[in-house]
Amino acid sequence: MTLAIAKQDPAELIDRAIADNRLAHALLIHGQNLSQVEGFAYQLAGKLMQIDASDDLEASLIKHPDIFTIRPSKKSRIISVDDMRELIRNVQHSPQQGLRKVAFIFEVDRLNNNAANAFLKTLEEPPLNTNLLLLTTRPHSLLATIRSRCQLFRLPTSALEFDDEQALAWLESYKEWLGDIVDGKPGGKQSVPHYVVGLYALVERFSNVVNELTKTVWKEQSAHLPEDMDDNERIALESRISISIRQDFLAAIESTTEDFARQIMDQAQDPSGKLVESVKALESANSLLRLNMKAETMLESYLLQALRIWSAK
Image (tube, rainbow, N blue to C red; front, side, top):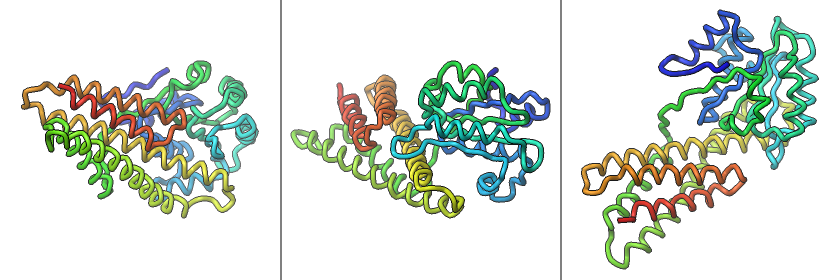
């Protein structure tokens, strides 16, 4: 069963499902923005566990004895079968407080095959009064047998706005770079070196901005982590933060490219075709991240394609 989201507030749909007692035991929550997906799942878990949302919700969930989590660990960023079996054992016990348990499976697309197969029986025969929240930005990477056993809940894509000055400056420089290409500036033999130098300057600055944002967010979140969290979990969490920031940044690049295309609509050329090509190139480059390609290499690949697309006559 799929909960479709159009103009309705996702929170209202969840509230209605809970009130009507039709919320499935396993909910696959997915969307393009990882931090948005996780934030929504925290809100849902708070409602299920009747935790006051005015408190530090995430910290309250982490400390709760009937909340269980599993996420990719170590540098491989894989959820192993051993990790999954431990989660399954934990959710089989009776609740220590109240009547309900909630388990988060963060980045569920990172399940290896053995872990996914071990999880199927729990999805088919869930423990009593237990909600399993599967979170991902890549729902189609999951086994069909897992997707079919979950209630699907897709979060709408929201317009992304960075409030970080460095990120905003980068996006403005990117738009100026596109403008120079379309206008043919500075002209003559100087043009190509100008574009290439600008391209690699953008790549370097992109890396710096992501690293600085990751450090800032990690500093804020690490202050609320449980003391017994081991080093592998910390490494995985910091990596997850970096990935989420990169995804947000790529979404902002797509939005900025669309804004740029709208601004040059009055010029002789029709930018709509180039915009489509550019978005496809960005999506293709983004898929390289899933193969563990470095973000800098991914962005370089995209910008080289963008240079070809927007300079074509």
